[in-house]
Amino acid sequence: MKILHYKFVDFIPEELEGDILYISLEFKTAIHLCPCGCGNQVVTPFSPTDWKLIFDGDSVSLYPSIGSWALPCKSHYWIKNNKIEWAPLWHEREISKLRKKEKKEKKKFFKKSKKKLIREQLF
Ligand SMILES: [Zn+2]
Image (cartoon, rainbow, N blue to C red; front, side):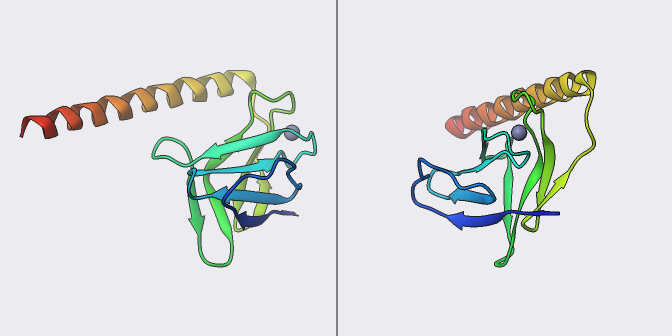
């Protein structure tokens, strides 16, 4: 099983080392090189509709899984307790289904937060 180390950084370095998850709390994002070895950078922003970082003081996990559908390798894996856990290969149909679902959830989330904002302005 592949181990991914983590590093909390102020700035994301220009040259990334493989096997390291760079975490910037200030910019609310993490970045790492695709663990398949293709050399592409994978950015995982933290937000209620993107990724959550779980840091237990010893290891990091990201939730949900990371699916690099836009990359040629289409890697899909979890980062759990500093370990890369590969997910089973997905078919195009499942990918597009998930993408649609994610879009819908995003829309719902932003609609909700907009409504809340309006409500807060009213009262
Ligand atoms: Zn890759």
